[in-house]
Length: 355
Image 1 (tube, rainbow, N blue to C red):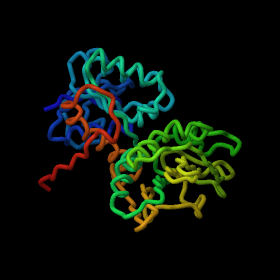
Image 2: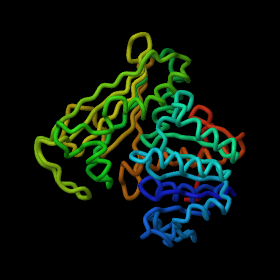
Image 3: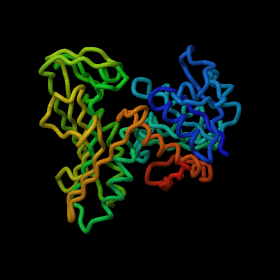
Image 4: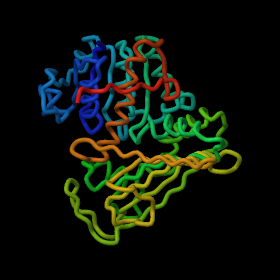
C-alpha cells in the first residue's frame, strides 16, 4: 500500500480524501490543513464521509512530511498564492514524495512552462527523488486525454472544441466566484480569471498538449471573451444576492491557431444563474457539463455530466478530475523521478465495487 497524504481540504481536498480512501493501492496516512479549527478532526469528517478514517488533520507540515509519505495530493489552491503553492509542492518533492496537483496551471504542459516555474521543481526532483504530475480540475481529462481519444475514432479531424458549461448557483466558493470570476461585480470590473494573457496561462498548456498528441504545431494562441449582465437580481442559497446589471455570465475561448484558423479550442461558459445568457451553450440537463466536439468525418460529440456530494455538478467535476490525479499515483511511484504531463500518464481503469 502506498502511504498518501492529502494537503488541503477544500472542494478538491474533500474529493481527494474520498478518492484515496477508496483506492485499493493507497492508504491515507496524513491530512494537512491550514485552518486551526480543522486541526485534530478526522479526515472522514472533513471529507463529508459517513465513517471515520482514523487519520487526524494536522497543520504541522514538517512532521507530516517527515513521516515519509510516498505520495502527496496537493489540493490547496494556487489561484491567488501561486508562489506559496510552488514552494509547498517543491517541499513535498524534496521529501521524496510523488506529488499530483491541479494548482500550477503553467505546468499542465511543462515543456512550455517558464523557467522560473520549472527550475525549482526540477531542482527539488534532483534533490529528493520525487515526481510531479499536474492536471486540471476544469477538468484536465476533458481537455487532454478525452479529446485525443475521441480524435482517433474518426477518419478525419478538422477541429476540436472542449467545453466546460456551468451554473454556479449552488457553488460554495464566494471568493472565487465573486472576485476571481467576477460574478456580481460591475460590468467595468475586470475579473482576474479573464484578464488578458491569464486564460492562455491557465489553459494554453492543454491546447499545446492536444496539439502535441495530434502531431501539429500551434502558431499562436488567441483569447476571445464575452460578458453578460444579469437582467434581474438573483438570490443563491450559499453565496447570497447578485444584483441586476452586474456580471451574470462569462464566455471565453482559448484558441489554438493551426493553418491560420482556430482548430483546437477550449471554451468556458459560466453563469451565476440559468436565466442569464440563455442563447449561449447550456447543459442538456442539470447545472453543468463537460463537452467535447470533434469536427470532421464523422462529427463526434460527447457530453459528460458528473455529480457528487448530494447531486452537485461542480463537486462531480472536481471528483472526476481528482480521480484522474489520484489514479496516477501508483504509476508515478514505479516510474523514474521526473516532471510528467497528461500524455505521459497511462489511463487507469476503475475498480468494480461489490455493490
